[in-house]
Image (cartoon, rainbow, N blue to C red; front, side, top):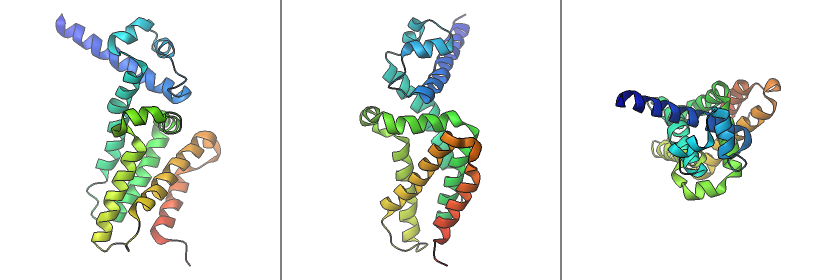
Length: 198
């Protein structure tokens, strides 16, 4: 009986998280209420508070349980690529693939990165763009040490790469029927790899 109750609680919590991230993605966390999430999950508003003390706690758990592992999965899936720069280029492409496969994550990242600075001040470890920038800086530093690329400002390079990913993601969300994000990712990768000189 206790095992069944525990499983039911776990399933209810997972449902709340799943519906919360969909609502956060659609409305932005600042415009979302606990009532919105309860309505989406088809449960009583008070039930949400059984599992989460506040909307911020729910948002934090969405970042940890859903968004964090997705982003870490992209980083981990490229770690065995021997060439450092190829690793970064593939990281770029895999992020774009995630956007196509799970647009609600793209929408969530785009909305939160622009609209909820207070959350990232309170929980800096869960800023996805910062996590990506740190990852690119680390690998670009390795590429310089290996003499794979010339000495550059790796933080500026990280902003360039992550900024291109973020903007491509935003544009696709706005006009996905008219934008081939996979082709754009391939072209951006080509420019990053070979530059613009003839």
